[in-house]
Length: 396
Image (cartoon, rainbow, N blue to C red; front, side, top):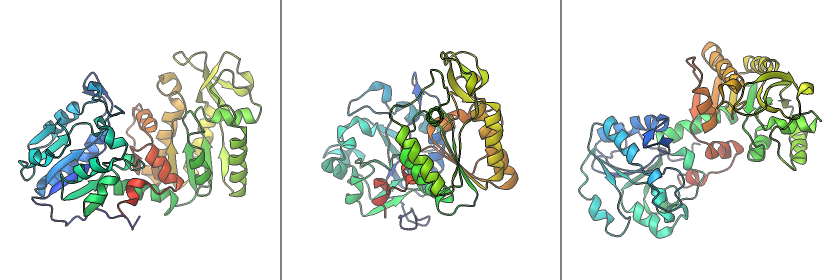
């Protein structure tokens, strides 16, 4: 981490054009922002740059428009939000990024902001195009990447742009993300418990194999736990299960044994005949062929809470059940409450990551506290895996 070139607090940015790559990829429905968490997190640093009288050019993406101008993925709602939240002139640029772009941006005054329309409207962004990167770089004197969640991608505004600007830095949000994850994998307080949930084990296999070497307990929840149950010849009805996964489960179990990592899987569950209905608590031998496992049961919740209470560090990625239906959100909310209580009472180091995890804990009516909430998905998992993320490597 110490090799990364972080933005220096005392850097003079007055009258300098600062290109700020942010992650403003928020859920928008009918032109209304449904969750402003990512924007709110970016505001303090933007305000700091405004106060320092920098000329700020913001780059961000929204969704995956694949180089097309999809009106559903415009940054206009985000522009309106920023306009209300920031006490300065802010402009929205919808034009081409061409050789004339510098003239168009030359009127920007100190402390003012230009937000460029969805950078992924340009196909050259995702192809990491050299000329496009050069044009983007020509807009600024300083480049700051404060979008950790995008830093696992080799894209123009994250990767190649750094070749053409002499002063490139990682921003404060990115620094906070790395410091938080390092609390789990480098500067950890044992015992360390990792809770991994979600639907597919195949998407997290490398993370699981890597994390086994670093943690004392691995708790598997969500639909991915079904694969471990099937391995033990346990009935799971018509629950989601992956094909050709037997060898992977065996590999995980063997590696855990070799590294003295205890694996905990569910011992009871909540089932339903469909995802929208009501739930019943069942032990596995009582599950019928037409039932789906959609949450963990009370005995499993007790065991997980006991492990959390015994831990000094907890990492959590992925919900425990189909939390979108309130009837199957109890497992996830109970885990969130237990982690939060321990974070407050005994200074448990708690790091939570992944969009589904954050969406799930928002459903809790209790006031929750954690050491760090990561808004990153793929980047969070790849950094945990020990990969050198492209967006970080160019800032070293």
